[in-house]
Length: 69
Image: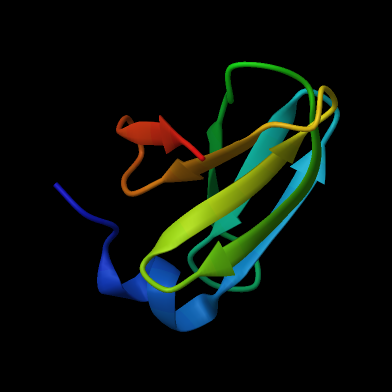
C-alpha cells in the first residue's frame, strides 16, 4: 500500500521528538515511528525519507513499509 494522495499533495513531514508527523492538511496528521531517532524528514518522490541520528537513511513508502538506503 502506498501513501494516500492527500498526504502526497500536502507534502509536509516534521520531526517531533522520536516520531515523524506526516501531514494530510494544515491540522491533520499521522505519526510514524522510525527505527531509530530521526533528525530530518522530508518527502522524496512518493515516500518519506528520514535521516536517523546514526546517519542511516530510511524511506517509508507507506505508513508501515520502509527500507534502508
